Image (cartoon, rainbow, N blue to C red):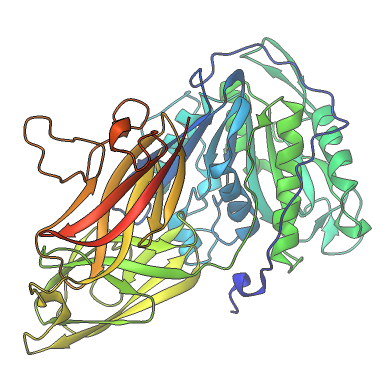
Length: 504
């Protein structure tokens, strides 16, 4: 199958926040109060079903919208759309974003692995400890997140096109495509102790979406599955995420379904974002600095350690020569996307080999995927000699590649003499300085910062630096506190430098 990303063009989507009357829900405490921020939580780290959750906290108190993508792995329109909101900052309200609820099924581009994850919401308790397979463990986390939310959106791709009347095998009441789904028209909320007009909300959203869809066949329709009714044609929805959120937590919950019959992935992502944006406006969740675009995924490089030695940079398409019996550990994959990356050392690894020591007994490939699509590879060559790049330790300064910085939880790679703009008060961590070849006795120093107050050894990697308090103005380049140097040194020789530009 041709990767869907190959047809992606750069796409900027306009946020749609007009002509919608906000829904008033009783106020709940926000996830946090203060300036906007993003917290990433990783569950089941190091497993094949690693789950990343992003909590975006708005500067002002407001409702919390939960977005689930990828609960079924063959529906890329949903998880690609959800991914766009993990980088959003908010003026008001909060988001809980789960871009890839079912990562193993996404990697295989299959609906399910051990069974449909969206049919695992079956217990009647609010939160129940999972004891089954990985799907049940993920569902347990999703239930906990629902308990923190005011609204739920579950993003899907459905077969055919929903129609209230029979038009064809692909256009009828049993199809889901191009519809917004609720489990009933009106539902009583145990949380708010009143009826929720789910149909009314959905119809407002649909009216807004359809203004931006030119093709009549692709316009959205309202689909009430009547889940609790004895004569429903969709009794399976009683085990779905939306029904569970509505009946157990009393929050309005909606399924957004684009059609699998539409082959233009960019259009399907656009439809999903139109819906999400309209729901955000409806519930007064106001963005501050949205970042919505799509680019083809491309691996830049891997950071690899051989037998625990200093890490190496190995670029996409290159070969790393090692010796049979060596152990490699890939600590980072740097691409134009941070999320949805998976590393598989073919034939010797475990399918999700990021951060795992893997013994290599033969030549093989390291394949890097962004979701189900391969975006890069590195070749592992086994040699019987010791003249290997992994052991090429010498006193000659190595070729410098990148400074790796963490700024407020976001990772950046910067080359020699590049600069990064920050604001005073941002938290900065110098993660590493990467080279091709071994950098013997290299130190990385932020001039104007002292990490070890008892013994200033000039090594500043790993410190969490408060740029409002921890930087010494007199050591900035112009002594005005606006520009600081970060240098990488081997002995007394500077092999690279970069700059922090601080706005006050």
